[in-house]
Image 1 (cartoon, rainbow, N blue to C red):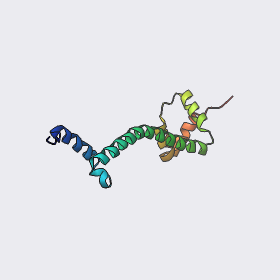
Image 2: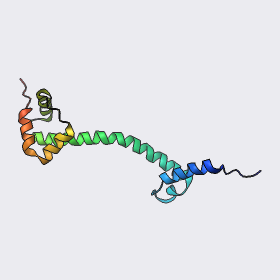
Image 3: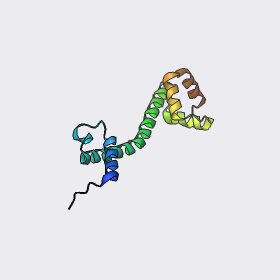
Image 4: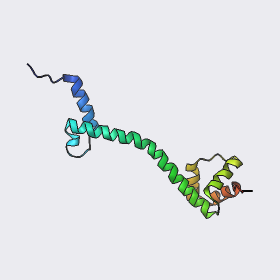
Length: 118
């Protein structure tokens, strides 16, 4: 019985996987079975971490805003509460950049949005 190599479709599938595995170390970039496992794992990590990146950056921005708010003697939560009540619609990314690069205008925002508890 002749050996079946499956021709064009299988070769195209193998080449697609090996192209995705380009740059991997050792046999993971050259052997189809190892490359398949490595590519599947890499794609899963990529899918997961695209979502985790959003969480990580939000945490970073909040930490930076909190540091800027502490320098102006207000807590993060009161600062955000005051901004909401004052109708300031700046997101945390912009507030974080202001806290780092433009401390003067950030201090003015703190004065504007200082949420006092009564």
